[in-house]
Image (cartoon, rainbow, N blue to C red; front, side, top):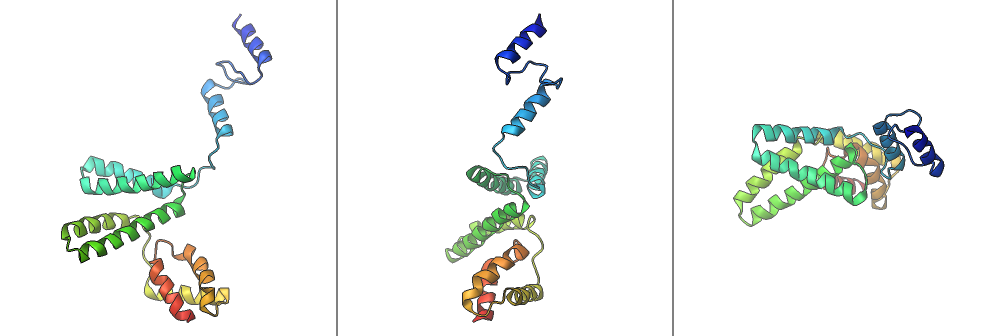
Length: 193
């Protein structure tokens, strides 16, 4: 009798399925297959850095490191905010961009707090900056930056300050998270002037 009702359901609506699933699949696998097919999200990208940050959050919780935990939660909140806003899953390069933005904000805050004489806030921002720095790649040496700038200028054929955008666009993927883009722009500008 049960098999008969399932056949009737299939005849009535071919999209309707029984608990057994379609073609002998177990119900959870059939459900997951439908979800993946309907999913509007882009395919999952490599999320090693994000996973590392989440593991560090768990470790900070276990070790009761309140300041570190608070900073890691700020990082994860910024990543999640960008994922929700853009409806994507961030890959490592995009997570690095979020981290760079946070580092830039902390450096600007430190300058403001120092000019305002707020040593307590400077110390807090420096602590957050130290945690953020653990997720950024090793910074490039000055000689390496100069070499990359020279190679990129030669490769793009940049001759004047008008070509600075081309050089910056070509350099950005190579130095992202490893050099201060503001200082890099000033160096390129000096070379092209």
